[in-house]
Length: 505
Ligand SMILES: NC(=O)C1=CN([C@@H]2O[C@H](COP(=O)(O)OP(=O)(O)OC[C@H]3O[C@@H](n4cnc5c(N)ncnc54)[C@H](OP(=O)(O)O)[C@@H]3O)[C@@H](O)[C@H]2O)[C@@H](O)CC1
Ligand SMILES: Nc1ncnc2c1ncn2[C@@H]1O[C@H](COP(=O)(O)OP(=O)(O)O)[C@@H](O)[C@H]1O
Ligand SMILES: [K+]
Image (cartoon, rainbow, N blue to C red; front, side, top):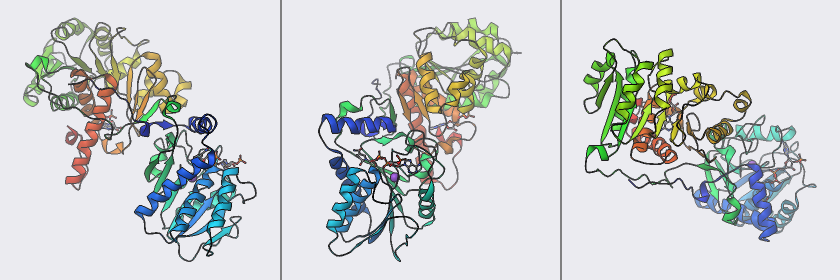
């Protein structure tokens, strides 16, 4: 299998407001492409997409006073040329518009030769046209700095009550471009046209529920200005998942060791082992306490089992470390540790003892993470590559610094991965991969389908499998997530009911 790197295309870079504004500014100053031209390209590409997809006759344009309104006015001008009438409301009047927006208002008026344009200077007197078929949200974009206030709130609430589709310029008004937080209230868009770079807030927290379909419109920003970006959107449009090629022998076709399971929790080990095996590995070797071996003998015929301890051992204990390390040293490969290990004190010591002498690329999940959280330091051999796969509760337990926890999950993941030198796959909505180099990758689909117990074990098995094939930690995480997404989509296409975790194997 070829080792892949996670190099996102520029279309999948995620910008916060500051970076967006910085790139705008540099393009204007250093490239001498003025703001008016950028606005023209932004608005005209949104208008072109609207004209291609929709039959439109009359739009209501809700406009603030900044450049976001300018984008809306450019759309209005192009649509006017295609006989689409416009009713425009300026929520802060039109006396104090930004320079480029002002210029676009004058231009729009000049294009209106047959009185198809109606303008309201404030919300109070606004009277919606008897018939209109869409709303354009040009109230607030990356310039939103505080809770939505005054008439903007009324306009947002009105728009959200209308049955007509709402098309948002850059970001739905009220959604914070950095955090995806709703600032008091927010537009519920059917489509969001995002300009020059996708805004982070579209994909975080409340973002996915407010944006509708996201349409990225390119602006002439030089690629080198985008290099400060360190957050990217993961999707299959740019990640080619290479299929494994069978090796000469089972032990050079990828070997994954799994340390998992204890009495009452053998299901987690079974799910993880089956999931890893389904990826086509040469061998999956499940190391288990001897007391639970008989369960695996019956359920996992394709998996090699290596029991440790006595028949009376139903969970891993401190004294099992030596034997386990001996087994791990037999073959090259990767390790998955954690699903269903249980939380006995002796298991915590076992985890510490085993990991502190293990050099294999390793995925640590579930109870393995619980054990790590009991220890003062990560028992990690310096050069070894680790992936931790915490859900939000496990992430909070792992990050003892309460200041960090209060920050956004994205920031927590980034800082934790950077300071500890491990790759983090933080589960939740969105799923976030954080790398030791400080890069983060966000999922772009509804991860709620994976919330039933067991899908975490399936995911850990897949990530472990790709690590065992020799992929880099970040790529292994991306493949594991997207493999689950592929399985989910297939399931939803062929069934009416909700999938079970085993459907993702
Ligand atoms: N060349 C470029 O830069 C390009 C930019 N482009 C576009 O410009 C957008 C950014 O434009 P922008 O910076 O003018 O900010 P924008 O979002 O229109 O709003 C700022 C105004 O809102 C006000 N305001 C703030 N918070 C508020 C609140 N809570 N409630 C009410 N009002 C509030 C604030 O008023 P203030 O509080 O300062 O008096 C200020 O006047 C960007 O998203 C993209 O669409 C594209 O055309 C590509 C080229
Ligand atoms: N393919 C996937 N893509 C995105 N997220 C996933 C995927 N598979 C699992 N998840 C995430 O993993 C979570 C389940 O893991 P977890 O909470 O540890 O449960 P368990 O270990 O009981 O299965 C889901 O809520 C979801 O956030
Ligand atoms: K907007």
